[in-house]
Image (cartoon, rainbow, N blue to C red; front, side, top):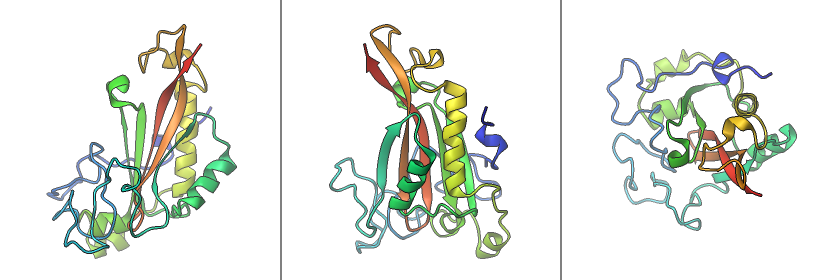
Length: 214
């Protein structure tokens, strides 16, 4: 059985210590904007109107593509991904999978059917903690402790830990979590992954369920 992800990497508090931040890197209610800039000044809009400024993630799939990156966005996949396929997905999305300079934030949904997810893990690299959120100074960045797992390994281990917790496929533990009746409609484990900000390195993966109709 895979170990819980919080036993493999350091999970940081939702409120960053010793800083009065306008936007918390551990506030999982919000997604980091795309582009380059300081989220403390403009969290939802383009900072100065230039191509490379911060922009929010639109719902329209055409507009949601990052204007300054070749790839990114959100991908959904089933509950039993092959490790090699998951690594290939991260390569296609140009995720810095070998990085270990990140803070991790984790939360479980209190109402999965309403929130449409089960557990989420956000990885925020040091560059984002400094340039995007202002949570670290450059001196603090140099001394920031590295994680025991790389970004890529943390994502893989999160998948494995969620599989161990919920069960793969139509497990009894998932029954009713997303509104299924356990007979004609049964929940099955699945995942979502998002590149929130490719430039700074902000990534999020979450477990979810999809409805299998008998």
